[in-house]
Length: 360
Image 1: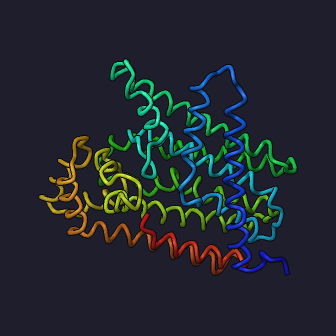
Image 2 (image 1 turned 30 degrees about the horizontal axis):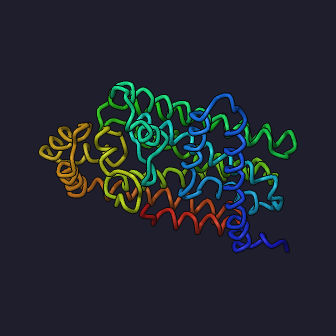
């Protein structure tokens, strides 16, 4: 029996190779920093700021790729590590661009690409408008570099051509689906909050690239058959929805010291989450009036945010949104129990439990 033919074996394979994923990312960034010496220090610094973004995260996406690969019989770390690294680099690109759209300059408790650039300009003679233009440029271009890198990591991997092409196709699918979700999200203020299709946004914007595509990439490399791919796709969609619903809750009710993210950003932007959709739908007239005045107000402060939280709790919106998250977690768990073979099923069930109860 191969070592990874048990749940502990799969878990061990993931744990042993996540550092290798980090090394692959570091090596990629280091190499890229030195490829265009004529571009100067600003180009190197932009790459360095990208390299700072993928450390300190949950490693959900590379973990799913590594686990699906090992859990379905794969045992060649050299083949799967670059693909797992591409999944994390894709995530980095999505975060950098998402922070632009949300106007955030902090990620995981530290300056993101935009925030890093702003810090370097603190003592410059540029006008505030010029500084803002520099910040936007750094974030936009940095996200583009990370996006291209997700392709680059796979195209340079030592893989058979059909695996390489299949994984590149998955990256393209992830990007297109996420952009579709971002459009729905960003254009959501044209729709009344209670009418927003927030679950579709979560599925397109988060679930596909965060869970479905990483699982399918690992399955592809392990030679998973179409039936197994179909089961993993459904499981990944449910896991991703549960993940996003919990994330939305933490974006309002979480502890910034633990989550590393603001609990005001989503409220200030008026983000059409399921939590807020249910709040507008279920609150009484006074509650709806308060939500209408506070949500989407860029100057919303902690006092107003506290009142919003009270409304969301009192009208039952928070409980109902978390109930939907639990329902999707149960669906993912049931697919793992009934459709996914051991040892991958055991690993995924443990992960679903962990994700459902997380606080960051």
